[in-house]
Amino acid sequence: MKTKAVRLYGENDLRLEEFDLPKIKDDEILAKVISDSICMSSHKLALQGAKHKRVRHDLKKNPIIIGHEFCGELVEVGKKWSTQFKVGQKFSIQPALNKDGTLWAPGYSYEYIGGDSQYVVIPAEVMELDCLLEYKADNFFMGSLSEPVSCVVGAFHAQYHTKGGSYVHDMGIVKGGSMALLAGVGPMGMGAIDYAIHCDRKPSRLVVTDIDDARLARAASILTVAEAKKNGVELIYVNTKEIADPVEHLKKLNGGKLFDDVFVFAPVKPVLELGDKLLGLDGCLNFFAGPTDTAFNANMNFYNVHYESHHIVGTSGGNTDDMKESLAMMADGRLNPVMMITHVGGLNAVVHTTIELDKIPGGKKLIYTHKKLELVAINDFAERGKTDPFYAKLAELVAKNNMLWSVEAEKYLLANAPSI
Image 1 (cartoon, rainbow, N blue to C red):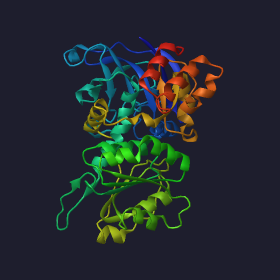
Image 2: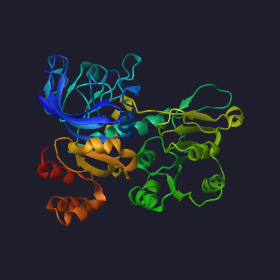
Image 3: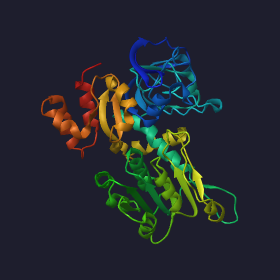
Image 4: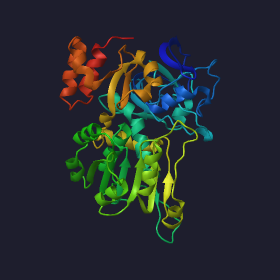
């Protein structure tokens, strides 16, 4: 079968190509990709090329398909899996396979599976490691968001705390404790706010910072203080840009106390150092944002590591259980990560978007892999719609949903957008 896909050949060498997929083996599955969400991790992969830790091939000889946040339908199921999976089933994939201690993952390491493709061959190890997950919903875009949401879930589970005199790590955030999310209204930060409000182990107070009033206002209009209060969480948004002493200011917002859990969502030295200063006794700092600079560093108070039992953790992705939890919470309506999506485009937009991702404002860039569309911000649909009826209709549909992507908008796009 032929497919069109974006493949990586080297540093910033991404190519949209058409090529033949091999016929599947008895232990493989052929799948149709419908949507993929472009991740900053793919941008870093493009920048680093063969130097990236997850690349295992000679890219010039064996280019890999990029994209790891994808959702679609099963087209042909190999004999080995015929009782477990069925043709037509919707699926999502946990790309962090963790096979035999390796870092190999769809979207980074394989020639025939990645999210920025029309069709893919799912190798046996994905099923063997229970990383092919059934997705039960009336849309595809949420399935693409399940992987980034699982990263948030995994980060919350990776937090740990101890009790005096004990060496046992109590995993997870402090239930009923205080939490600060720094630089926390980007796409992943908003996912963390959503999860913190609606998960089973939630804080009692959640302080979210940023340095942009417009971003903060938008976040507050979607993830409201009232919704948080309804779920037992005091949610406070604050702009720290003009605050002379942010540590003292944030402490006051937390009743004069430092915080149990602090998450840092930007790989910026002053933000990370602020996070360190906000930790209370037995506090845990999660450095969520992955830097591109391999020598990135910041100062940390090791006196407090010794005497105040400060901890630091970092996670890169979630595991299969995290993704299952994400899918379950989305399925029953407790999580709605649609606010992560700010742009929509077709497969033709992937190369430029991936390479320039750090320069394109907004959140997640959602790609429909069988469509030919420029990457357009949802907020720009109405302007485009003045001359293009297709975008006029999309603008009408998202306006009904607080300027957020929706099931109706996706169905309209799939039915009316031009094929690539």
